[in-house]
Structures are given as C-alpha cells and as structure tokens.
Amino acid sequence: MRPLVLSVSVVATAFTLACKSPESGEATTAMTDGDTSGPTTTLNLPDLTTGTTTGPTTGSPTDATTTTAPQPTTAGPGCVPLECEGEVLACGDCMDNDGDGKVDIADPECVTPCDNLEDTFATGLPGDNVDPCNQDCFFDGNSGAGNDKCEWNLKCDEANPGGDECPYDPDYKNCPEMQSEQCLSSCQVPNGCDCFGCCTVQVDGMTYDIFLGDADCSLADIDSCQQCTKNDDCDEECHPEECEICFGETEPPPGCGDPTCAGGQSCTLDMEGNSDCPEGYYCQTGCCFTVIPP
Ligand SMILES: [Ca+2]
Ligand SMILES: [Ca+2]
Ligand SMILES: [Ca+2]
Ligand SMILES: [Ca+2]
Image (cartoon, rainbow, N blue to C red; front, side, top):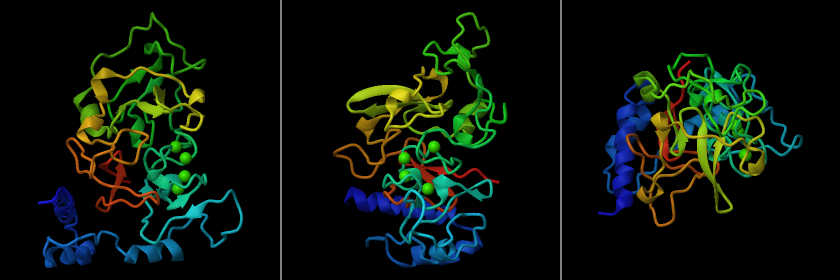
C-alpha cells in the first residue's frame, strides 16, 4: 500500500521489460524469482564494477593514480560508466572531475553523458554548438545541423543569448514558430528546459532562464550565464507541485517521495551518479533518458 513499494515495483517491471536481451539474463531472473513485496533494490549489478577498476575502457585516464590532479574522486562500486558514441566522457566516467562532491549526471553542470565538462553547462565537445547562431536539439550531444529537425536561430531571441557573436536581430525573418514532429519526439528535453538548451534554474531564491550553450555558465557563477527566452513550442515545463525534479536539482521537491516523470520512466539518482534506470539509460531530472546509440 505504501507509495514506495508501488514505485519500486513499477521500476522493477520496466527494468525487466527493458532487459529482455540475453546478456542481462542474470538480472532478469533475479527480478522474476523473488516476490515483489520485499525491498527489491537489487538494481546495482556488482559485475559491472570490475569493469570500472580493471579498466577495459581504453583511453580513460583512470590509471590508478589517486594522488595527482585537482582531486577528481572515483564514485562508489555501484557506478557504471556511460558511453557517448563509444567514448566515456567526463559526465559518464564515474568520477567527480571538478571536485564539487557530485559525480556525473548528479552534477548539475553535467547535462547528458555526451558532455565532457562537469564545471560548466557547456559540453566542451569539438563540433558541439560550433555555429554561434543556428541551433538544433541541445541535448543530443552533437550539433550536426538539421539531423534532429529542431531549428532555431539565436538572432530571434531578444534576450540575446548569442551575445556579441550572434546578437539579437529584430529584423531577422527566419524564426520558426513551430518545431517539427520529429524534433518534438526525438529531442530528450529535461524538465525546465526547451529543446535548444534554454533552462530555468533557481539560485539563492532568484529564477533565471539561462542558455546552456554559453561557455562559462555554471550554477556557481550564474552571473556569467547568458539569459534566454524559452521556445514555447518545445518547452518542457517543470511542475514541482507534481513532484517533478526541475533542471539543476537532483532531489524531488520537499514533501515528495519518489519523483514523477510525465510521459517517461521516473528514476532516482544519488550523489555518486548511480541511478536505477535500466542499462542504456541515464537519469536526468528524475526521468530515464536513452543514451544516444553509437
Ligand atoms: Ca565525471
Ligand atoms: Ca562534479
Ligand atoms: Ca559541477
Ligand atoms: Ca557540462
């Protein structure tokens, strides 16, 4: 009867469904065997930790040196590295790269596993947001123009998120009022953002709409963030009163148990970056999102 038990079994069911592939047979049998009344929190698969420490992930700088560098700390044994197009980046490497105590997606400046900077909202990926004006889906980890059919131009925004590089142009004509169906269905937008990376955050009781594409923007230095105007047609409004987790937060609002996720599977995330999403998903604003396939 408790809401906790209910939501755990919902997650477990979804997990079982999502894990029908033969390689995860172990987890599936563990799920279906036991009765569902108990505290079924067996989602941390211990097998995967050996992958982290012995390191089949080539190219990751985790070569047992724990004494150098600006204190990047490794997450606990439950953390499973997340790949972005075959590579493990800073926001999926199970390490707290900027030393703020928050690992990977639990760090607010980590937007997706396709993000290589834990200290600012920018991704630091070459080729990401190279065009100062034309924007596509911000959350797909690349900026190949037009591949997700989301289209916008920073010249259209009177809040001037493009700054000096792409200033607001009141006479600019190509400002689409509607986004395509493909954009709306394929762009995975966190609660509180629009599809172009304009997100509402709260800092010290103040509300800001900030542009994540800005190179220096972070919650710790909110004054350096460019302001922006939400694109109404692809705005994923956050509803904290319905226990949704809004962008920039990791905990459900006070008084809520588990978070809710409109139209998706909800998830919880700890400060070490561990979530209860199925394999191949990451947990952002309380929702399981697909890791972009290679
Ligand atoms: Ca990291
Ligand atoms: Ca961090
Ligand atoms: Ca950070
Ligand atoms: Ca980032």
